[in-house]
Length: 255
Image 1 (cartoon, rainbow, N blue to C red):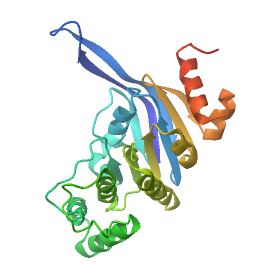
Image 2 (tube, one colour):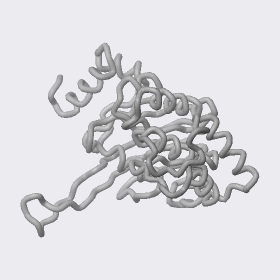
Image 3 (cartoon, rainbow, N blue to C red):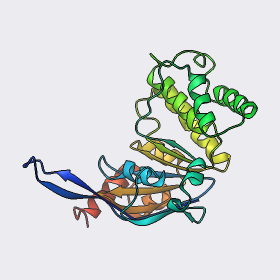
């Protein structure tokens, strides 16, 4: 389980009008929610809302200025290495080692996580089969399509069998077949009892996959609940309309 408790994060940014003048930008302010095991929690919000920053803080890549992240009741900064090993993190940068094959990329990350050689070989074979990678497993990743790169990146973060999975827009840029395959993988993670937290801009995807939705706008939580609850609260017929209504209400554009 992930508990996000009153997270705040600020950055210094150069003022666009003055080369040597800096201003403070609030990326996140008092963000709180919980992601449960065996559920899919979706982060939904416009560009610049703070979703990627929040995922990086949960993963321990960035440190919050205030608040804390609890993983199974333990603050992440208290036991960072152990808790990181319990996570599989697909960030916004999904680069692969292009001279290595897909299998070699996956094996390398399994070795970094200390997976024993025999178990690692089994896990790699399972993931290649599960993700339909048999035709690309032993090809260098240079020249892979976006879908092939994404499959390899997903296998790479799952090879150590993490109990918590963080995905930053995992279907971005994928074609229809690759998107369907990725959604099946996410459903499989839920069925295996994993805690799954992912960001997306695709309303249909969020509506189909998520047990809980956290709508983030300008660094704050604008709404939390199941897709059905958010529809009911907003009085809208579709999740897209509910999303627009929630954002508008948060900015005082709707009553």
